[in-house]
Amino acid sequence: YTVALEMNFTKAAETLHIAQPPLSRQIKDLEEELGVRLFERRPHFMALTPEGELLKQYAAQILDLADKAAENVREIGQGLNGTINISTIEGKTLQFLSEWIVSFSAEHPAVRYNIWTGGTDEIMTRIRNGLCDFAIAQDVRETAGICCDDLFYENWTAIVPKEYTMQSTEEHPKIALTDDSIHVRELCSRDLIVPMRLGREEEILSWFPEGERPRIRCRFTHIMTAYELARQAMGIAVFPGTAPGFMDALDGDEVVLRRIDGISAKPAFVMLYAEDRMQSNVVRHFMEHIRASAEDMMKEGS
Image (cartoon, rainbow, N blue to C red; front, side, top):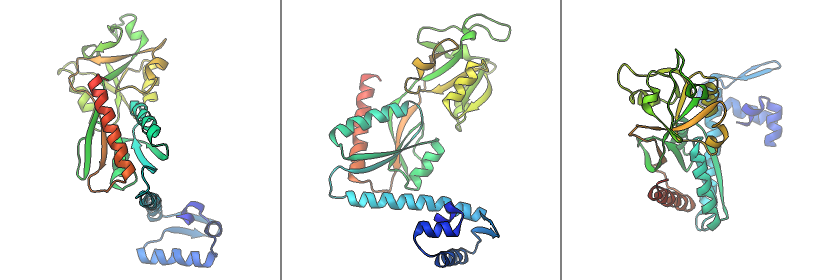
């Protein structure tokens, strides 16, 4: 892994505090064992082969998992301390996760946290590979080997270009809003900007009757992309939930953000974890803390 990072045997040997010839020999032995070339070597040039690039990715995961294993073993019998590795998605999940960490830390100040943020597919891979203790994601049902606990539900939100609410045009009839919502029927036959995640487009189109379905103009992975496209009147962006402070920061002169009414199904935020992986004591306690906090939220109608 160090050779793949440095792309130079001399520098890699210095980093590892070993001589260069034994390091070169180890790489050669590894290539012979695997039956592939890992590096392209020419005078003044060195590069990873496709096989080497793949092994580099696995090596990074292996080293990460080894560090995590050592930390978890040290925690046994030492009470609630150590490190919790969490994967999550962007948006409102981060707001609640931060609140759970703060409240848990008030009782257990020795606990540390590593938080990785990415897409749902990446999160599922990290759970399966043991690179996180658990994850907070959205609308994921149980899959093979992964458990799924519902935590809380969110509303669908629309980012509407302000000009759509001002007056009717031949292309865009005026949209009716209330102070806090927009009805889903106002989105019929409109241009929409939707999340790129698999299945989202089909779910959104299912809200509408045949013949009145909107046109999907663009798909996004980051909410700021959706905002910019809506701000420039590319269409109406729809997404599940809201990012912390997002409503206050962006609802203004160029767009309005409103909850979408008239939809029966709400996005569920869930906690995911590997079914067959033993959790450390501190991870189990933190997961129970999250479940209890989420249950209180649902009772209060959050």
